[in-house]
View (tube, helix red, strand yellow):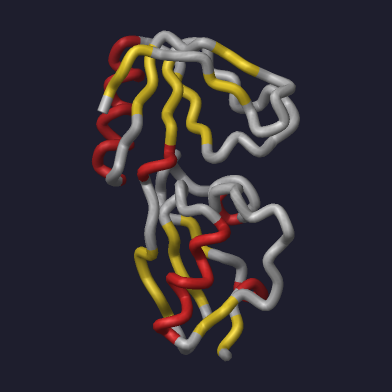
Amino acid sequence: MTRPGGTWENWGRTAKVRPRSVETPATVDAVQRAVQAAGARGTRLKAVGAGHSFTGIALAPRVLLDLSDLTGLVEVDTERLRVRLLAGTRLHRIPALLAPHGLAMPNLGDIDRQSISGPSPRARTARAPGSAASAPRSSVRRW
């Protein structure tokens, strides 16, 4: 969904921007369409998660790609202790997603409102914004 840009501010209120427009995709296909449309227009697009960074890294003056609606569990491999989550999934939601599979995270920080696309090393190296991110093996345990 595309909407006119309002003021976006990071979690620490140290950076803010008023993008021209905001894209809020709920599917990977919608992310791909938004990226392709921005590319066709020659417009810069910036993907953001929860905005937990204290820097201006998420400032998007043109098109802000808000991944808040791109959430959920994509794949579970209980043998290899790996899960794939969509980029907008918030950390505090992960325990409930893993529990039905007999999995848990051994440690979850006291600030858990970030999205998986921010703290996950794999998410930072994902091929495209909004692609599913794999949690590092050491982050998931049987319980």
